[in-house]
Amino acid sequence: PLTGEIGDSTGLVRLRARFGEKVPGVRAIVIQEDTPGGGVAASQEISEEILRLRRVDGIKVVASMGGMAASGGYYVASACDAIVADPGTVTGSIGVIMEDFDVHALLHRFGIRPEVVKSGRYKDAGSPFRAMTPDERRLFHGTIMDVYDQFVTDVATGRRGALARALARRDGRPSSSFTDAQIKAYVRSLADGRVYTGRQAVRNGLVDSLGGIEDAIAKAAALAGLPRYQVVTWRPPESLTQELTGVDPVEWAAKLREALLGSAPRIGYLLR
Image (tube, rainbow, N blue to C red; front, side, top):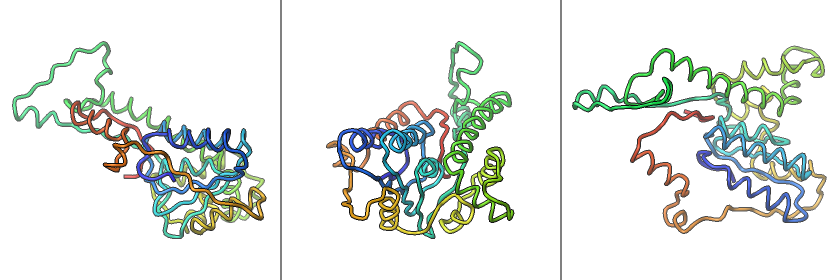
């Protein structure tokens, strides 16, 4: 399972260590997604582990999209051998977002004036205690566009065959005639932050087929050449705190820090 906002890659990294290296006989893995995406680094780390499962361990990996598999969730799915989605799945939202608060007017109203000592002009860029300057906005935008280009490039690479076939249907040309640059340009045309249903995503090459978790399991077994197989459901171990509250300790730490210190600007592959 990959559910909720992606804030930590530990569970999926452990999955590879367990099934890719320690448990013999695993030939295919289905990742069951229901996520709006999340952190850039965490999404990338999970994607890298999926690629290692495929290339190093020889395991087939299929993404099964539930109610939502957007932004970082789609990024993770694009690293898999195949993607199966329900017709009404919300997916896509390929893009990058950074969010911050500007509360300086509110502080001024109550006579509160923050004092900042910094080593360089950009050290407090994005601070909620003052308005962002045009120069700082350009700086952040450049960073976001670099991360966006990584997203587009990785989707174009991971989904090249399916995307080429979608272009072939659209343009009436052989799928082999499209260059890497043309595939990337096509992904960029889809990657303006919009969401797609599962059915729309199949038409434009972002998803391979429609179906639920059982269809995804059957697809994984077929890719692995398994006429007979046993399905084992893996659940990440939970701490006592998580069992009692239902909240991951990483989330608790983030919420506590945010409550005490305020939030810093965050760049994410996240549906908003």
